[in-house]
Image: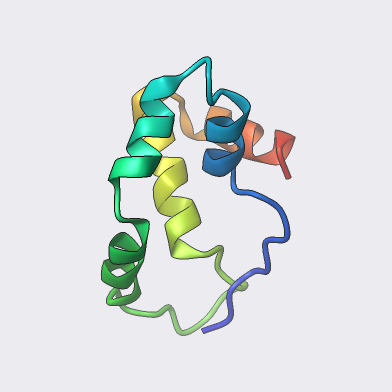
Length: 85
């Protein structure tokens, strides 16, 4: 499966680093969660056989977490991600 190349920090990474002092909860979550273990679990999901290259699964998982935590709609999440791309 092809994955999109992401050359800069993800939305989640950018938000955590930008708000490191303003939002200690996100920074603490980043310290507590074993993201490598999460990524291993996500790698076990079936691979799509067609379509455009996918974004890295961990990046999308983090984006969905932020969507839930901040109560963002799908269009709002898309706008937030586009704003940081």
